Image 1 (cartoon, rainbow, N blue to C red):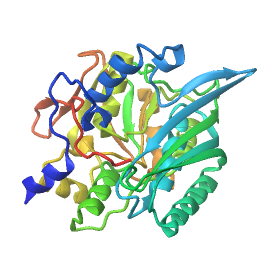
Image 2 (image 1 turned 120 degrees about the vertical axis):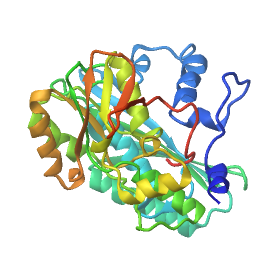
Image 3 (image 1 turned 180 degrees about the vertical axis):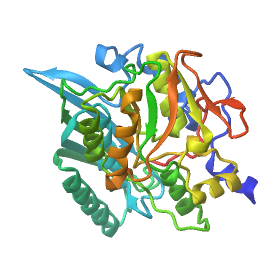
Length: 352
């Protein structure tokens, strides 16, 4: 049974060369990086784009703003704890927050498949409105397109967010230095396993709900506690915590050492991953972030996170080092170490 389930939800391990796009190119892992490097960046060149952050800091007159765009193709459209509408708002708002910006406005594009029930569409749009209200952002413009039945899998949503940048607070993927402490703001792997269970009709020992949430208030709490001294932030969505840390490690040219015993992996997530042959470090999250802070501020930063409702499960999980730059390793409880690389393909496609 396990082999059958895994075969239905995971991408095949990709070979090195492709003459066309495969599902793994959307994984957030090695194939995604290759797709950008080989097929997009050679043609679409700008200083802001080359940074490959969660958003781009650009000038608009005398103002500095952050722009971020994302497209959501999650299957199923509705799942425990949220839906594609909530996910679209929170995902884009969080990308702005990871760049240190205050989210302000969203644009929304809907690609609707012929045959989608209006009852479903109304629920999703209403859910988007609630999420935008909670996040304190306005949806100011948008677009709708309808495609033939069988061409759109119900509904795809694209969102673009605009936030105000702050020169006093500008975490960046290349801002980490050796000695910086790695924090994660909450439990790992909940969203991806929730989507998997809803998609495949699986039942686990504990009921799971997606952790999708607007993280800007939690980022602000961390900012205040550290007096703006946050080196880097990243929300570990596609590719999970492992991919997020590998991206930061490569950008900052530091090594990262994780402590396996410190990882906040819920028992239900660990049990599901063990049963299905998945690694929780690569499972998507939508309600937490990883943060790098100076070592002398690690305790106050952790307290600030834990004192906020969205950060009660925060943990200190590792440290940046000067050894093995660009590589993430993990110490096991038995004293060994293993490399935590980026996956070439995708464990769980269509999770955001």
